Image (cartoon, rainbow, N blue to C red):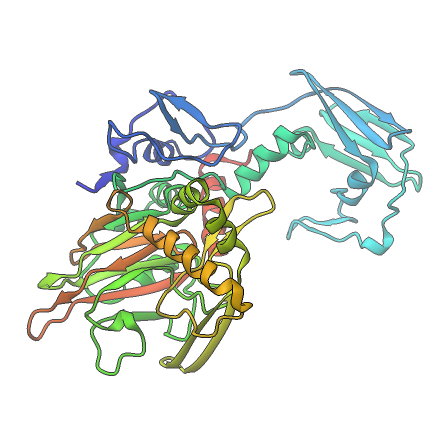
Length: 449
């Protein structure tokens, strides 16, 4: 059994601002008896029953009170002492830049009105005090006054722990890594459409695990468009707003054949590839057509551990990808990308790999060609290990939603019924709109931290 419903993941003792249901989903994504894969490090990782399990790093809901404030003129900072204990430091320039008054901030848009050219980046302060309503008031040399809410300040504390917690709350960067033992989180398609809590649970699990299986959609075209509207809007590409994965004559994409598709991410030929993909099964194959997927982030970490040289090569070498044809309109795409992208801290943040659209152009010194091929083959070999691949067969009405920057997906060859071909309808979204909807739902259901 490769799927697990959210409702099975009961662990009521953990209370966080993010959805408890989605957090439970993350804790139960592996069958018992197998050690969990490595997780991104973070201060809120929890150790439960011998398995490393993600907890939310979002700041819990709380009311903060200020005990005292003082201006540190030499350091040009304001020091806040909290009733709960601890101190926070806030630079004068940052405070002036983020004044919340109507002259400096457009409240209706939560946007800054104060121009950088009008900001004195060397400003001092004349006075600081705690007001009767527990706000911090700052009087500036030009007699302008700023008032800051205590919770607002606490959330923006410059300490390492506070910055990491807020970063996690805003972006949910921690991931649960998995292999073939994954129990794919599942939810009801209709419930996600109509219920905000179900939609939030879905998006939280999609971000953390990278894949969620929805059941109960109608076995007809249109389900992915309705699901996209629940989030925001469809990502238009050269294959249209939605696209039909079927065996087609004179196919303009290898996906539109009945042959095997190797593990890949979609659209590395675009400089900004779609972040999220929906695939809806309208009609299943008579024989074959099983889908496959691997956790590209986990595979990259395995490669980093087993073959550091190959990992460094795939992070540093920029590979040409191309895609040419006619569909929604004619197109001739070209891009250069590293196969494994990492951030400034060395954390894997994106996989760009599609063997079908990897160009014959290889913009490398000739001495680097063989090391590149050795490295890419090493990564593919890690991905193709049986213990790393989740294999499943979609049935009509299933919708698979997944992270296209993280998961690599493929398909076994298939044979369709006479007169009724295997048919999947697909669509793309960007992570910006998905994360936007997630934050809106979380704020509406749980309030702002």
